[in-house]
Length: 440
Image (cartoon, rainbow, N blue to C red; front, side):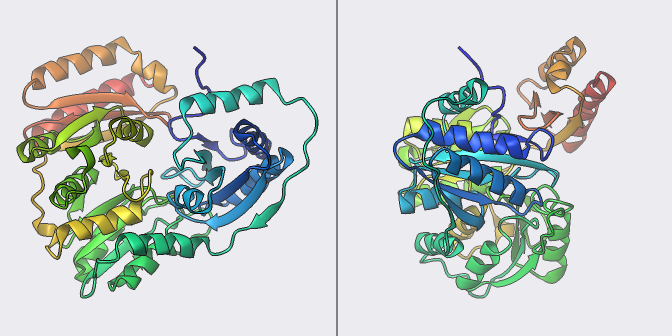
């Protein structure tokens, strides 16, 4: 069976102007539109705040229109707005131009189908095939390109409808918008629900997205929450599909804890379909222990929100996510949604202090990303395989080791969990040294 070479775990992603050129964006737009087929497909295009976004938006729209699709430009919006708007307007396809948490020089294109889910592997493979063989046949009448006004308000209205009973009056909340796609929407919905809001990283200039801010760099938010007397803080990533939290003491709360809070809350309200939750191999052992104790079933997938989503769909379950802060609540939207997840956290707390959370006890964990020339070659190293096996055997029954390649960057991710922080750091350091010695 053929495999995808262009699409990764989250669409097509690379350095804008190098791998992801205007020409490729145009061809992708045309190929995806032809693959959807059927008359004049209506295609939504949204983007984040990267400086290359406007170029890729224009090229992608041109490709869609050249294949006979009508383009609706939704402007700067969080990724989860795409499936929401597809469902609300009955659209045929949506494209999101973003590289999520990556640096500004990168960009990407990912698609959502008419069912509001990301395109399947098979559909992405078919789009790639169209790129390779080119397009023949009779010419089509070009589609139109126009702005779709009111998209942010539509997204905010959907959030208001979902969290209509949530009163944030009296809470002081800090938000780090990563200079990305949430910089307008996140403060707006928190204020509408009554919170007093302090906003960080909400002045995008095209190059400062994720730069020392957001969920990948929460240091500024931690300081702001601790020093400003806030009740909690939330850090989003560049495209707004993930979130991390900070309690009033400045302690970071990752996706594992947020999912645990949400799972117990939704089950108590009889809103946890199937009585289970889907997580990934990165999820802390403490999460599994807590869910076993609470009688909540857990299924584990490989890393990537698309795999979590696939498992949710197959089982008919409603909640899943990743330690990184991708949290999917199928009762709202079939995508990670950082803003909705932050509000779900506050809903789950029901007035309690985030600092007093007790949904799970975490095993000490350390994750180090090691940049390499070729992640596949690095993972094939016999020395790394031997070292990983040795450390895993030493931790058997007490902790675990996970060494894996990034799905989007030339990185090897080394993760260790052990009974103490000291042992965790020691094991992680030894494995990182092995990767660095043979990084290529």
